[in-house]
Length: 81
Image 1 (tube, rainbow, N blue to C red):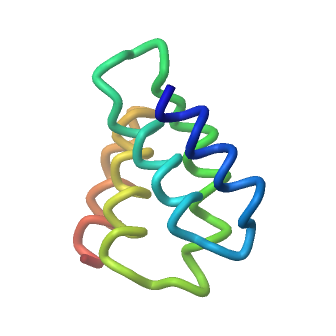
Image 2 (tube, rainbow, N blue to C red):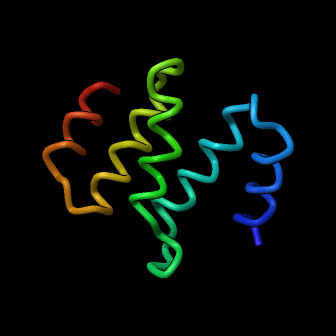
């Protein structure tokens, strides 16, 4: 339900990166393995990574790489924090 609401926010406010980041974090770190989707997280957050070089973006990219089993890349993003 939270994912649905955040996606609606993302669609209605595409200029607001907080919605995209919240969706990405939910998809990256959900305790429900059926919900986690590292590929989608990378697609969402890579659009934010260049304009928003924040700790939250780097951490989310790190989580996405962990979900995909890409531990070296995850470590690189975590070091940027």
